[in-house]
Image (tube, rainbow over all chains, first blue to last red; front, side, top):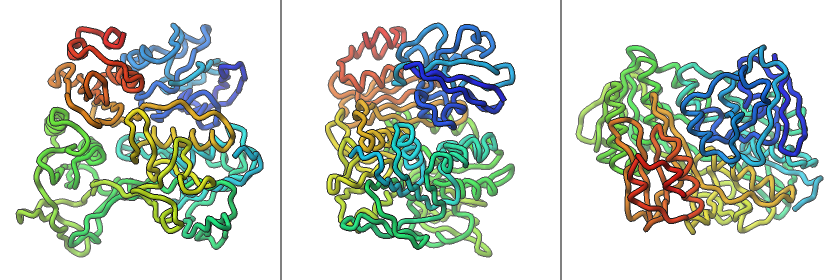
Length: 106
Length: 410
């Protein structure tokens, strides 16, 4: 279990306990958190689960695969700390993780 | 309709219905929500059924759209194993198989589509399967494995995904396709040839121009597919993937305008009755970028229309128009399709199919109508934007993979 804080674009925070083994995307979707659409359900096919990872957590969330990098390259509002949340597996090490959602997922 | 206390009844608890219920709460709807589904379980994702789930890489929990407790916690009256059999638009009630007659202020029809069965001899034998529901996938899983022979009737995307998963599980797989090529209705010749070659490399056998004339069996279980030319293809199980039919009977019987699907407007609202909406596979909806109306069977379409209906009911602005898209995973191939190939006068190949990394662009004049991208996210992502913007493209640049997609779209 890891506590993850999802921050909407308008600043609204949702702190949720997410089971290890799920992805950061699944933690949001299963708890009906607004701002992560995840149209493809985690197939890395759509880039609608884009988040900004809090700088302090970047090293712990792992590296992007070539596919993720390539999808993100064309998403809107991409920054250095952009990730597709379906590609971040939740581990105990991520307890306290903070991610912020972009203004739109299109 | 922005009555926060309105009773919303959703008939159909698939991807569209389940998402509409969740979005209504997310968008602040406070009135009662009743969600009725004919399956025994809460809404779940169907795409993994033919892929990760079949291969044992996903379980029921990971398939579920929301955890079981979500519905009670959010005051959504979820009723599994229940169908709706009569809609009375005058009284604004819907009669359910659990014996209740539920009154609605807004009714959302999300009844989906059902697999088309082959009306041929032997169709009621055991071991003839479809793939629409978790129960179907469960039955199929029990039939595929090392040494088993699986026949797939229909070389469409579902058939090909089942073939790929069947091979991954060690089964012998043969795909029977009536047309002279696979994917005949949905893809161009180059893509058909590529997928056939890739599947053959992984041990899938194809019989093209092969019409299934009858199923043959022993002791009530299928043992083969008899083709129109008289040959019999031996098998232990059959998956029939020859398309789906919209479940629009409830709407039709109630006098709602239907055209192979319930005809709706840009808010997913029935053109006949402002209190009734239809979303997902059962909706016949307008698509302004193609200046026409049609019915789509895809998860992104279900999600988009769930957003439309939840927005309409809660008084939010209508979501911006989308570019329809879909995806398919087979072996290590990721296929992403954006748009539909309407009114196409030119097909342009970008990249080399031999590298298993290429894209097929379908053009109308110098506008992109659709793109099929194999292991090529930039072509898919940029293609989607070009389809939506209707911006003219330079064809020479588009056909040249050394020119980046960003430059093509610049």
